[in-house]
Amino acid sequence: MKKIFLSITFLATLIVVGNAQETVYPSKPQTVTIALTNATIHVGNGDVIEDGTIIFSNGKIVSIGSTSVDLAGAKIINCKGKHIYPGLITPETDLGLNEINSVRATQDGREVGEINANIRAAVAYNSDSKVIGT
Image 1 (cartoon, rainbow, N blue to C red):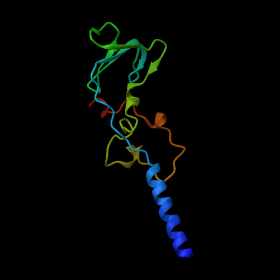
Image 2 (cartoon, one colour; image 1 turned 180 degrees about the vertical axis):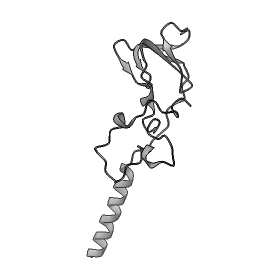
Image 3 (cartoon, rainbow, N blue to C red; image 1 turned 90 degrees about the horizontal axis):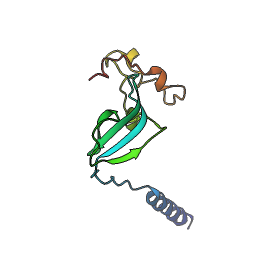
Image 4 (spheres, rainbow, N blue to C red; image 1 turned 30 degrees about the vertical axis):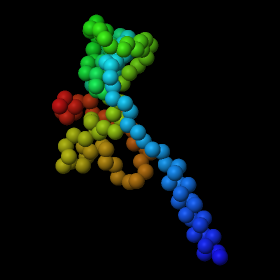
């Protein structure tokens, strides 16, 4: 009897845990061009664009620059007073953290150990990296 009870409890737990997992659905494709205007844009190479514009089309950034570009037909979002970091749209990148694959000292994305709460990408980021320009 105890074996049956434990089996049923285990099975019920598996069912509950399995159903609790979030189902991820892809977002709808972008149908209209979007322009984020009047923002302070931190490009990532040290440049800062005041009152800049970022334009998205087909789900990708197509332009980063001054607000004086043609925005005809675009959905405009006024970001006055906001700071935008376009490089953070892809937070899983190791750009600027890896320089030469065969030299471990330049691989700041591969620290030793399982838990490295002390690691800060802002300190390890190399804005002079030759890889960033590619």
